[in-house]
Amino acid sequence: MPQLFFPASNTLALVAWIGLLLFPGRRLVSSVLCAMVVPGLLATAYVALIGWKLSSGGPPPESLSTIDGLQQLFTDDWAFAAAWTHYLVFDMVVGAWVARDAVRLGLPWPLRSLSLALTFLAGPTGFLLHLLSRGMLRQQFAIEDGTDTPPH
Image 1 (spheres, helix red, strand yellow):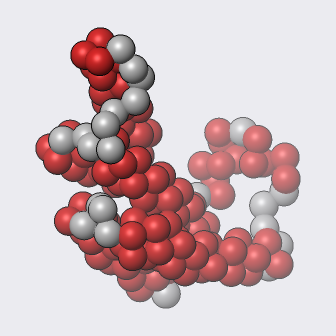
Image 2 (cartoon, helix red, strand yellow; image 1 turned 30 degrees about the vertical axis):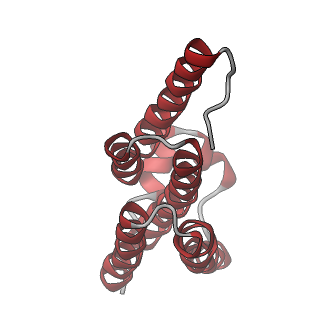
C-alpha cells in the first residue's frame, strides 16, 4: 500500500507545482491551491500516517534523537512515505510564498522560475536563491533611485 500512496502523493504535488511554475501570479494557484489546498490534503495524510504508526507502537522516543534510530525508523515504508510527505508539504508552502513574493517584487521570470524549480527539487536551495535574488533586487533599486523598495 505505501507503494501506491507514495506515487499518488508525488503526483498530486507535481501537478500543483506545475501550476505554480506556470501561473505564479494567479492568486488561486499561489495563495489557495499551493498554499492551502494541496498542502492541507498532504498534511492530513501525514497526520493520519503518523497517528496510525504511533498508535501501533511506534519507535521509542529516544530513538528519534539519533541518526541510527532515525535510519531504523525509515526502514519502514510507511514511515518513509510520511517523512517524504512532510517534505512535500513544507516545500510547497515555501514555494507558494516564493512565487507570491517574486511576483510582488517583479523578479524576472527566469530567476523566479529557477527559484521555484529548485525549491521543488531541493527545497532550501531554491529558497536561498530567492532570498539572494530579492536582496540583490532591493540593493539594485536602492542604488538606482535612493530607496530600498521596488516599484509596484
